[in-house]
Length: 360
Image 1 (cartoon, helix red, strand yellow):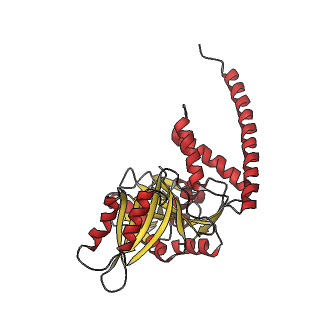
Image 2 (tube, helix red, strand yellow):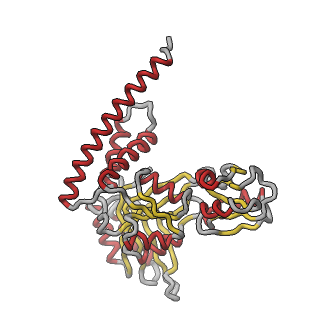
Image 3 (cartoon, rainbow, N blue to C red):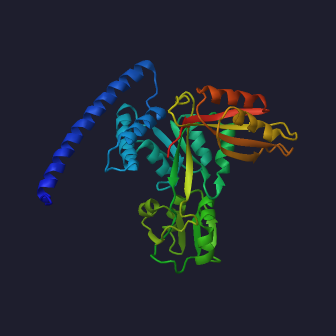
């Protein structure tokens, strides 16, 4: 026999009060940890520690909460506790409502100080100059490939990667009218235009496609002209008072973008091993037959798995290339350290872009 709704609500209210008390106890403990960290000069944010906490809770989760919900809830709890010590200042491609902002909140939690930037260069500048503690930039999309500007900036920047987050991206057509009729211009970031080109070719053929600095910027502009539409997130639509004229117009139903979390080494050193880690590198090799093959041999010999391999022109005028490589593992593991040492000995240029925990 089902219990009375009023009784259930009373029990939920009682549990909520218990949770509030427990969360405040946790916050008090976090404050004590913060005092010890300040005395030691240790960083407030430790991504590998937070990844271990979430992974451990997911492994112990008896349900009915889903593992993804557990991760979301505890990320917010840890974010709120961190903010009691010092809220992280996080730079990302703005304005409000971009997928970069969503990635920042999904990684750090909502208790952050937002630093929206007009382009990727400004994100790197903010994190380098100290205007922000961390930067969040997209590095790869599963349908359109790498975000080349981010890779180019990583090559010459003092920033290193300390974390990553993969975001399921849903692009929507937004405008003042709740219809696709009468659209003259579609505005979006070039990556979004590319990810939606099939839908645009079919449903809005011949309509001008105009690239802007971010999808949210496109939404802001579309809010000022009834003949314009933007490709952006639902949050951007809410932010600028736009209707969703067409839902989920991306060509790939499982469209995902991977974002890198970057900072100066003095803000946060390379995270310690979490058990699920990645090393990102950029290398170049002498222009001779078999050179690219040779740099892959150490990985095979030492049993290290490569998860990404991308090339970018070196812009030297000599048809030379930089190769961006991701490998599984952590440099503290002997087989990974041996593979990286052998790889470095073969390279004309070698730079570790970052070592960081892998997230789902």
